[in-house]
Length: 85
Image 1 (cartoon, rainbow, N blue to C red):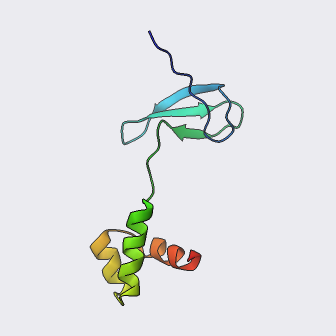
Image 2: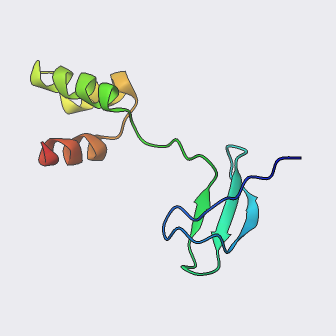
């Protein structure tokens, strides 16, 4: 049998316990040291390629509302990306 030691993504501690399942079906963990919850192998957010594609569409004079409908992102997300770049 192979055991895999899971560490907290936030503080690196191995003092964690299982904490139910996420709606996506992934295992959730709770760190007893930093008192934060995390997912096993999180994959949320947008890839850099996807962000660049969306920002290029905005630079080609597409409207924010049109981009949010086309790509399925919130306008607030697009605004925050524009402020960072």
